[in-house]
Length: 312
Image (tube, rainbow, N blue to C red; front, side, top):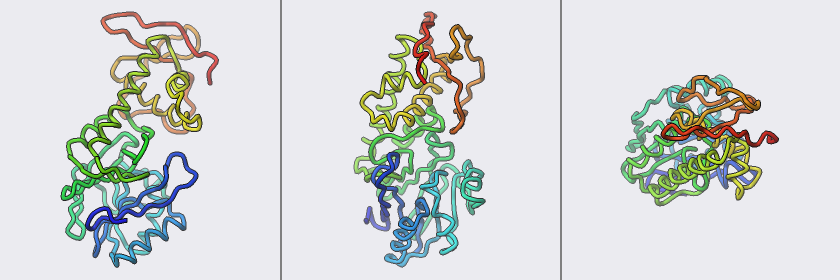
C-alpha cells in the first residue's frame, strides 16, 4: 500500500495475537535505494511480503532501522541483512539488547536523538521516545508530515508501557511538537489525524492515572486490585497487560511522591527503597505483593486500611 510518494506500507496479517491488532507493519522508504522501518517477525510470510515489495520497487535495501527490540520488530533483520547487505541501525540504548535478543546480531549504526538518515533523497529524522521500552525510536519525514511510531503509538488502542511512564508521557508531549499529519504505527491501521491521536493517548493515560488516584483515595490497593476495579469493561485476557500499565502509573506516582508502597503483610512498614526514573520492575520477575497508599496533600494522613488481601 502506498502511503505517500516513496513511502510504502507492508502490512503483515495478524489473526490470533491480542497485542498486535490486525497487522504488524513494516514500512519501505525510497524507490531506488530504500530504508526499511522494522523487519517483522522473520517468519516465512513476513519475509516473503518484504522481499516481494523490494522486488516490485526494484529498490536496493540500504538500511534497516529497528524502532525497538521486540521480536516482531527485529525478527527478520538477520535474514534481510544477509540477503541485501543492508546496514542495521538502532538507538544506542538498544544495541546491547539487540545483540542479546537476536542471537548476537550487532547493529552497524547506532542512532541518537535527532540523527538524520537520508535515503533516495528523503531525510528521515530520528526521535528517541522512551516509554514502551527504553530505547524506542520514532521516525519523521518532515516533507509530508509522516510519523512512524513503532509501538510508541498503535493504530488503535494503547500500548503496554514496560519502560517508564514518566518518560512515556514526555515522549508523547514531544511528538505533538512535530505537527505530523499522518501516523504510521507498528501495528494496526494508519491514522490520518496524527495530532488528534497523540492527544487522545495523552488524555487516556491521564484518565487512567486519575482513576488510580480515585480508587486509592478509598483505601490501599495492590496493582491487581486496581486492574479489577478499573478495567471492568476490558477483555480479561488483557488484564495482565493492563496490570503492567497500572504498575507503570504507580511507579510514576512513587517518583512524584504521591503514593507509598508497603509490604503486603498487615501492618507492614513502607518500603524505603530508592525509586529511580527508568528503573521499572524487570519483565518476568515475580513482584512481591506490594500494597499502595495515597499520600494526602497538605499534610493529610494516608489511609492505612489494607484492602484486597485475598487477591492474587
